[in-house]
Length: 238
Ligand code: F6R
Image (cartoon, rainbow, N blue to C red; front, side):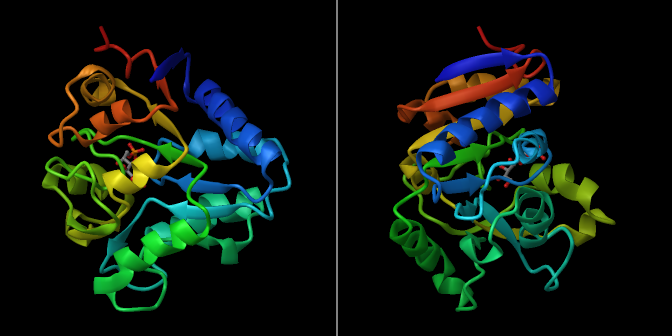
């Protein structure tokens, strides 16, 4: 991976948004993979500031919680609408979230894979990384070839995400996530991480053995990866 150490989240956002702008410049109906959480927010802000016409862009979110009441403001559908679709001027009909096809949940993974394939695959996937080393919600133990499927969140991740909810009890226990195999099929990956809490996961992902114990390490199997980190997140890199 190409590792770029930046001063702060704003600089990271500018750099990541430049990658996205380059892809969309070549292909106005590019397929983008969207992460949620805190990490990509500066990227989405910087992209919005570029005022590009993104109305033909197609998008696939990485993951979604299972079991939230419909329309819950912390569902990833709601977050993607609020943080990505509206500020960037995307066509909401062209942006998908796993499990949004209205069909049975048991088939939602397969249907999402089909939708991504029919769109021609993801051109650029934005990724954050969890303290457990997860990308998407592929927690340790996820098969390196995994497809989109239902997973159980670790307690670590539920605690980390409790900040978005009224209480820990409100954080869902299950999710549907693009698999590591799905993520690896994207043509380019841009992984961002900020802060000391991510340093160990970043070091493992970039330099550690490729192992399902640290799912982010699969990025080492991909030929086109940019890792954008601040000094703190880079602090355990050799
Ligand atoms: C979000 C996702 C997760 C997050 C990770 C980091 O769609 O798939 O892997 O990227 O949990 O979350 P933040 O950015 O909130 O630290």
